[in-house]
Image 1 (cartoon, rainbow over the protein chains, first blue to last red):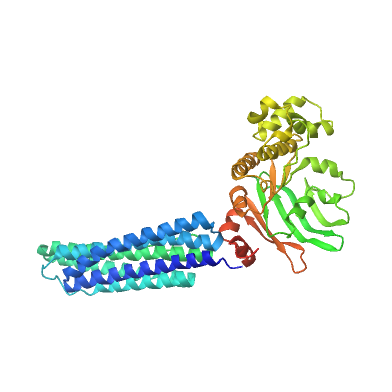
Image 2 (image 1 turned 90 degrees about the horizontal axis):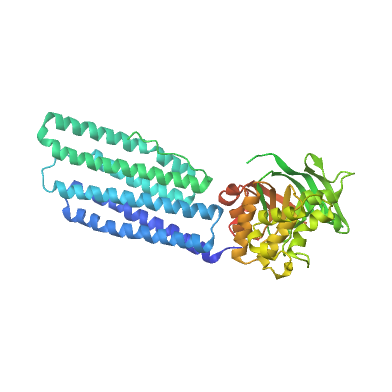
Length: 221
Length: 256
C-alpha cells in the first residue's frame, strides 16, 4: 500500500535539498571565479544570492516540520527527514563560507595579485565536487560513496596546508605582502571549513542508510 | 532497568481447532519494562497476550504447544493453577469493563474473591492511588462505577487488577475506546506503573507503542494466516531503524 501523498511530499523535500545544494555549489565556484578574475560584480552577486540560499533553507525546514507534524514519519522516512534537517544547516553554512570568500574579493579590490592562484581554485573545485557527489550519494542512498567522499577531505586539508605554508613564506620574505596574503589565507580557511561541512553531510547519508550516527570528518584543522 | 525476564515464550504455538493462530513464538519479556506488541489485524497479537496468562484456556478447542515461562516455571505445566497465574498476571481489556457495582467494590473485588486478608480500605486506596484515580473518586467511592467517564473506568479496571498486586499487567488495546486526553493519562500511568510492574501492551496505535514502550515486537500473518514474530527489539530500533523489510513497510504505513 503506497502512501501516495506522503511519498510525493518526501520526494519533493529531497528535490528541494538538491536544488539548494546546486545553489551552494554554484556559490562556491562563483566566489572563486570572482577572486580569480577580480570580478567585483560577481562577488556582489554571490553575496546577494546567499539570501536566496538562506530562504531556501527555512523553506525546507518548514516543510520538514510540517511532514513530521502531520504525517508521523517512521523508520527510514523519519531518518530521511532528520537527515534533511541536518544537511540544510551544513549547506547554509557552506553558502556563508562562499559569501565570506566573495566579501574578501571585495576587500582585496584592485590590489595587485600576490601570485597566480593555483591551489585555491583547486580547493574550490574539490570542495564543490565533493558536495555534488555527496548529495548524489544521499539521493542514491549510497553510504559507501559517502564514506569515500568524506575521506577526500584529506586532499582539501593537504591543499590548505600547502597554501598556508606558501603564504607564510611570502609574508616572512616580504612583510608588505602580509595584508594580501592574510586575506588569501582567509579564503583558504573558508574552503577548508566548507569541505569539513561536506563530511557532515556524508555522515547524514550514512545515517539514512544504516541508522547509525558515525563521525566521518576527522579533519586535522 | 533490569534485563531479568518476567515472561518468556519458548517456541509457543497456538491452535483454535484446526486453525493455527501462532507459530514458533520465542521472546523474552523483560521485567519492569513496557513491551508493545504491534502488527496488522488478525496477526495473533491478542492471542499471544492471552497465552501469557492462560486466558485462551477459556476458549473451546484452543490448544497450546511450547512453553511460557513465568518465574522459571512453565505456566502450561501440569499442576499449575490457572487462576493463580491470572491474578499474578493481570489483564486490562479494550473496552473498560467495570462491574455494575460501586467504585470501591470494583477495586475491592479481586482481594475479596481471593480471600486476601488485610485492611481492604487500605488496599483499595493504594490501588486507586496507584492507578492515578484516587483524587478524582475519593469523595464518591460508594457511587456506581458506571457513572465514571470511559478513561476513569479504564483506570478503575487497572486499579482492580493492581489490587491483587500482580507482577505483570497485560493490556489489550487499553486506549482504543478512549479519547486522546484519557489516552495520554493511561500512557502516563503505564510509565509510572512500569517502575513496579511489567507491562505488555497490544496496540493498533503505532504512535502509542512508540511513545510508551521500551521494547516492541512486530507480528504478522504467515501465508496460512498463522501469527509469527517478525522482529523484536528496542522501541527506538524498531521505529527508527528496523532490520526487516516487512517491519519497515508496516511501521512506515506502507502495508497493513
